[in-house]
Length: 259
Ligand code: G3P
Ligand code: CA
Image (cartoon, rainbow, N blue to C red):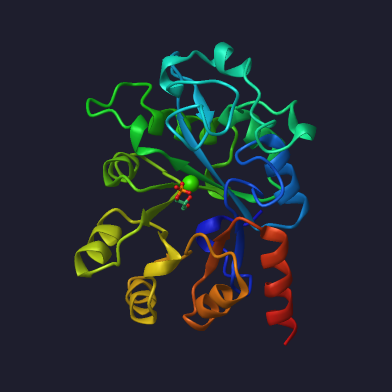
């Protein structure tokens, strides 16, 4: 695959499967990622945090209650304990075999068939930056697997993006935001050399897309799940969309490109 940062060889929008393909599969599971890749998503998005024994695990919430049969805080359990949990039945009886994946398992599954957008959750940020801080573990893993060029790291947390910007040869990064961008946001993104801005689709405007583009930053809004929003984002000339249904979005994108 071509380096994310230099891939201009496509017509937007990129289709990014948010937590895999959660419209049809339990979010952040291997089943969801495999389905998104098979559906032709350009990129998958996933959420990572740390287990009690400091392993990088893939789960959105800080607690287990919503998406597993466990209860309590993810960070209070070891990887071995987390692996005992069922992360699929809450979504459908056919998914009882799904577990909370480690990040390395997802990277091995995707195996270069799509770009990977790894969102580091703010709850995993550690002020004193230990040698095995989550952002260091993620970048080291990408380096070991030779996936620095085809992965990106996103976060709502500027501290995490800042730590990554201090590293040598860091991957593409993205700032996620629920708030409209202003001049300070653009300046911060430029200072941290982020590749893209990932706003909640409800706060995107054409003028903000223009501001980001003027600074050389791509725009990938998230939760673009209905045709009207897709059309709105396309009209604002965003570069990609993060969606809960990559199949449906793929059809819209295909129709747009065919038109
Ligand atoms: O990538 C953007 C999006 O994933 C951020 O929101 O809460 O779904 O992780 P959330
Ligand atoms: Ca996310």
